[in-house]
Length: 312
Image 1: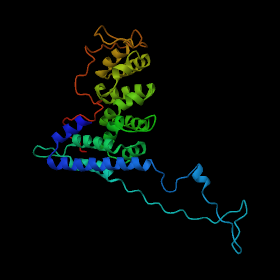
Image 2 (image 1 turned 90 degrees about the vertical axis):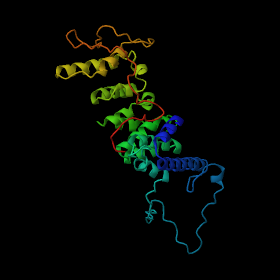
Image 3 (image 1 turned 135 degrees about the horizontal axis):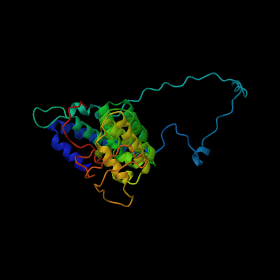
Image 4 (image 1 turned 120 degrees about the vertical axis):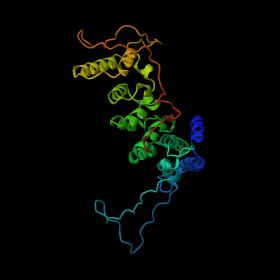
């Protein structure tokens, strides 16, 4: 996060840096206040133990006081107190408005969508946003805000098992928004998606044209995965039968599945077939190298900066 913060400040103009300082201070203050609140009972909490025993019982009705309704009788309904819709915390409003404030330091000082995404990640981490908070921000956010939530998931306190963000990952993978898909297959997905869901995430990248460089832990999780190899082979045959090209990244992933779990290298040998391929099925040749050829989108430190024309 420190490197992301420095890179972001180097990129922003003076006014945007001042705005970022205020946003992070508000988020940090919220996290501190939330931590203090969590350590003391809130008004209306149910109290158990010795304190509950000390609670005085209701006084007996005196003469002339109407008796309580008999057991089974219907008591008059008491209207529930009206609840106001909670006002978003100040830092949440900063999170939403980052696109308007994050502008490049160099002329002509255009709005910078990737800088806004980085600022949102930093704000989420400073606020130590929990599962319900990130779920709300994701559900009500724009595509740019959703990408920031997905990118920040590995750094956030999401419960004891850390799986509160899995439904958000699954939702992003159901879309055809390639930037959401790329953000969804980062380090959080590598740690928390089960094998079935993770295999389909890899296929989703191939189907939508998202580079598998975005898939965190690709080599480790696909190595020796015979089921993933079968799925890749089936997908390659379907594409070939329909007269469509096989995605360039598919041979690379398929080569990884042929490796022993103890192997560390991929050889660029002869064509590789899926274990379920027939003799007449299409062969897929692995690429010469399985190393990343460009900036990875799976960095745990947040979004990487690069040219983008998308509005935040």
